[in-house]
Each structure stands twice: as structure tokens, then as C-alpha cells.
Length: 107
Length: 120
Image (tube, rainbow over all chains, first blue to last red; front, side, top):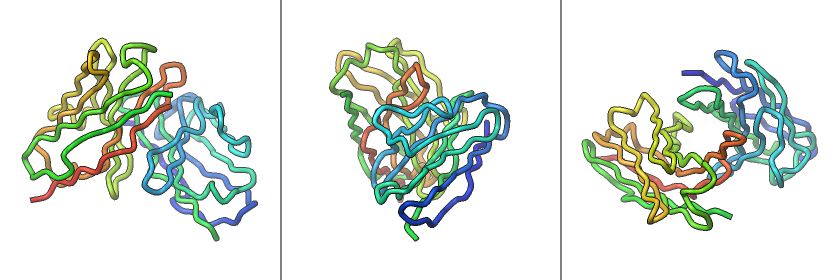
């Protein structure tokens, strides 16, 4: 299985801050990666596909980049509704595997 | 807008079999070439992809669960199901059904999740 390692596992930040979350794959996965946001008690919500394609309705302050083994999710100016847990998911090969998550908390 | 809704027993004992159903509304399970998927979220281990079924009945399972798992589809009822046998405490998790969009290979719709607890 492809292992997905996210860092940091948790992050404290303030409204207006720029934050970056990193996801590393144990082997090259091209750009076969999505990013998801999960709020407490809710299902994950898709943010980004193909490493950098913002999904319809997702604010433009979210962006993704990377290819191969290293990927990043950046939030350019944190808003109160962005405090949540973020997951990467590789779909390059089965079984699909998730990162362990990054919990973004208010400082 | 398609909606997914899981239903299941909530509490089971070790060695029992879990049966979950995902009802799909707002669209046909037979259209759009989607992959109808089960995902679970362990309290500590995080998110785990379980497997999918296509409307034709083709399946793909996570090898870690394959020996205990069956995913089936009922197109006339517009729902798909999961059966997981020989349960242990390690199967305690929130179980989600989700739809994988073929063009992006991402999950564009999710159920709200159902907590399954395995305990004697």
C-alpha cells in the first residue's frame, strides 16, 4: 500500500494567517491526489482534485500544488470557518490511502 | 444533487456480521459511471478506504478486509450494501458511503456516517 504522511499533525493559527499543510507519498503518485476538509461530526468535504484543481464552490483562498511524492495544501488567509481537519487522499493505486490528518486550530 | 444515507445496527458483538445499506436519492445509481464506495473512520487510526462497487456489480476491495467483505448493489432499490463478517473491536468506526466521480477520482458526495461499535 502507498503510505501518505501528512505534516504537521496539528497546527495553531490565527484568522488571516497563511498556512501550508504537506502530504508525502511513499512512492510517486503523479498528481493523483485530493484534499478534503472535515469538520467535527461531519463527513469529509472535497476541496481539491488532481493535486491542484479547486472544486466548484471552494473559496479561492485554498490552493494545492505538487506532483510525484510531495504535495501541499495552502490556505492564503484563514477564515473562521476554515478551522477543521484536513486530509490528503491518493487515488493512484488501490487500495486508496489517506493521510493521518492535520487538525487546524484557532490560536 | 445526489444524497446518500447510511443505515445500520449501531452496536454489534465480536464475531457477528455487520450489514450496512446506503440509500441513494436524487440520482440513479446506474447512471454516470460512478464508483459507489464504503469508507470508515477509526477513532484513532483515521480514514480507511474499504472498497467500491460499480452499478454493473464489479467490485474492488481493500486487501486488508477482502476475506471478510462483500459489497453488493441493488439497482432497483437504488442502494448498495456492505457486509463485514467476523467483527472485532478493531472494526469499531464511523462508516461512510460515498460516491467517487470517475473524471476526478475524488469523492464528491458522502453520507452523514453511521457509528458502528463492536463490543461484548
